[in-house]
Amino acid sequence: MLDEIKKIRTEVESRLADIKNSDGVENFRLDYLVKKGSIQSLFDRLKDVPKDEKPLVGKELNLLRSFAEENYKSLKEKFENSKETISELDLTLPGRKEFTGSHHPVLQTMREMNEIFIKMGFSIAEGPDIEDEYHNFDALNFPPDHPARDMQDTFFIESENKLLLRTHTSPVQIRVMKEMKPPIRCIMPGRVYRNEAINARSLAEFHQIEGLYIDKHVTFAELKGTLIQFAKKMYGENSKFRFRPSFFPFTEPSAELDITCFLCGGEGCRVCKYSGWLEIAGCGMVHPNVLKECGIDPEVYSGYAFGFGIERVTMLRTGIDDIRLLYENDVRVLEQF
Ligand code: PHE
Image 1 (cartoon, rainbow, N blue to C red):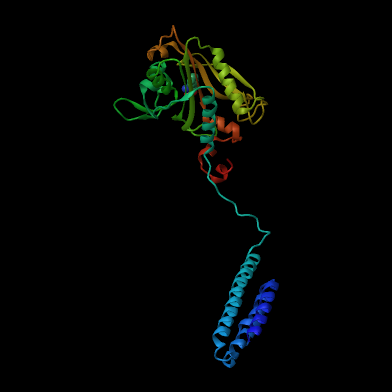
Image 2 (cartoon, rainbow, N blue to C red):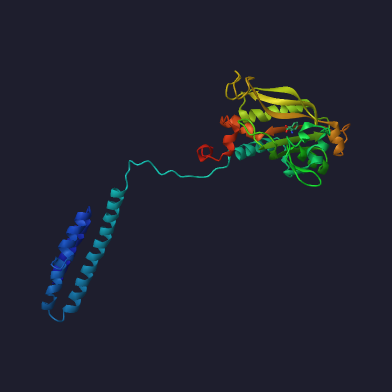
């Protein structure tokens, strides 16, 4: 009997080693593990075994049965799983798309602009969105009858001290100059508000980055150099720029920086109003009246200031030709950035 058990054990071992698929597993079960299988028939013969041999034979038989059963179970699991994978996976299906969020293109632009100016030695300053007339206009040398002070151009907040939503980031210049002693080299990113009709080119709420540099002997050449350096980093070495004389109450002389239109490449089109150029920044040398107002002696110090519209820069980088697309929050637009 013990010899027979040994024989079946060797047989079982070699059968197990040969099993290659789930049919093989099933045939193994039918041959060894069912009631009429060869292991059970050995159990059936246990009653004829002499009494003193019974414990040993019984033990060996049990070992054989559990060996066969355990191996059967694990092989069954293995082939069942692989069968499932093959039948359920259609390898020709396109992969599942992972949806990951990203920063809004305007925020991306703002951060990139900050980064370039930080590398040039500027630090970041901030001011409040709700300003008073003093910081937004008076201290910036706006005359009392300037049209920007009109309700049609500025959102005023009903209050005793005539609060308003800042129309530009330039009031932060005043706050910075009153707080710090020259040399001052700051950029001031933030949101600004204007009471304007919304169309493809302008919104009532948008973003600017203001720049301010105050020191002894600061010249207009440095202003031009800094802005061109920045613009080339932002738009590439081959982009073309021009400075055009302009006017702001808080800078003298004043200029505007233009870049070749991204849509027509300078030929003239609807976006650039057929001029071939797009305005990207206002700038100039800080007006002596402004320096004086902030307690800085214009005989000793001079400085420049500039202001970029961040949405405009974003449009130039992305090729979006309608500013409203940036704020409609249509995922089909946003997911491209
Ligand atoms: N504040 C100006 C504007 O809103 C831009 C500007 C900033 C111009 C700094 C000159 C100097 O248009």
